[in-house]
Amino acid sequence: MSYTLGQKQLDTIEGVLQQDLIDIGVRCVFLIDMAGNIIANRDNGKIKHDVYSLAALAAGNFGAVSAMAKIIGEGEFSLLFHKGKKENIHFNKIISDFLLITIFSNDISLGFLRLKVNEAVEKIKQVLETINVP
Amino acid sequence: MAFINPKKKEVQVKIVYYGPGRGGKTTNLEYIYKKFRERIKTEMVTIKTHGDRTLFFDFLPFDIGKVNGYDIKIQLYTVPGQVKYNATRRLVLRGADGIVFVADAMAVRREKNILSLKNLQENLANYKKSIFKIPIVLQYNKIDLAEQGIPLLPINTLEEDLNDKLKTPSFKASALVGTNVVATMKKIISMTISSIIKELR
Image (cartoon, rainbow over all chains, first blue to last red):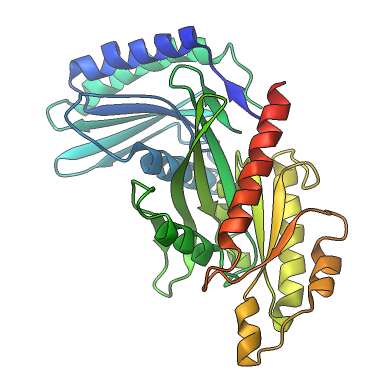
């Protein structure tokens, strides 16, 4: 029932989060599983969010939206986006068990962010596909 | 589905408080939050309806220190107890490593306890988990009501109804007053951690 990732795999994932997302101006990014556990997180050093609560709520939120998708005959909604006045949150599913959550300000356009998230997702997918999640 | 992070030397463990509606699951978490306020760095998260009933879940992260050099991060969750919220209940149960079943000791709630335990078994089966294999502790809550003359179920009836097949540790408790709330939590944490350690060997 438990699972783990090796030091090398975690380094790779954190490297991707840093280079593809934080370095382009994203404030905070974290990779979680659907149980609400945090696999990796990175931020720009200026903010201090309660990432454990965010992860629990994000997993619940994504689960609720997936259940809605099934009711209307969609398999799933693979990405979600919440827009605020200053801060925005973007959720992207990675294979069946993981979510990449990005918090960013209006300095970055949604289109550019989605492009960079997609690139990061492809790289992270290769790492996650090597492990067995029960 | 505990996640073990060798880089941060950290283990994240998910424990879910399950049971019938108005049984005291949220009150358990509120008591723990109050009692260990100085050790819990963050706010307790609750998603409630207007009538103070849990709509989605409550969430309380809790650090208990190190085991074998690893920081243990316990994440306590509650589910909504009301029958109609089964879809959300199932979502919260995803990836649970340990369960506290909070039964309502009031005589009028006998049937509700039994149905809720059956519902737990079904929802676990949905994730291909067996109620007989997952670490689980029973809590017979609201024993303080006896003082007010409210009829309670005798402990042996509760044991027969709920613990006959499970044969797992159980506690008489009062979440409101705090009786055995911490004892229940300590028991489920130690059972869950030893199950994770056993699994890793």
